[in-house]
Length: 101
Image (cartoon, rainbow, N blue to C red; front, top):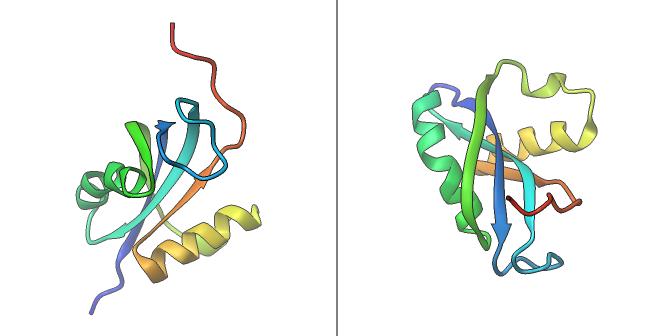
């Protein structure tokens, strides 16, 4: 099978039933998705977060990852590798975002 492409999306979502997160808290996150195309990855991205207890997922922007091993951040590099192996991975930023006006 051809190597799947990797895409990453910057998103915000609200914790619903997420362990260690306050219900109703809004967080920024990176959602990595491995798929045949960017469009396919984009279609799957929100579902990745929804499937792990997040709601009101909003994709802010996305891009294809040309070289998943190139990130200097070990957390992001690990997430990219996980997504290639497992289909998807998420990195959630710890600080809550201010409530939307």
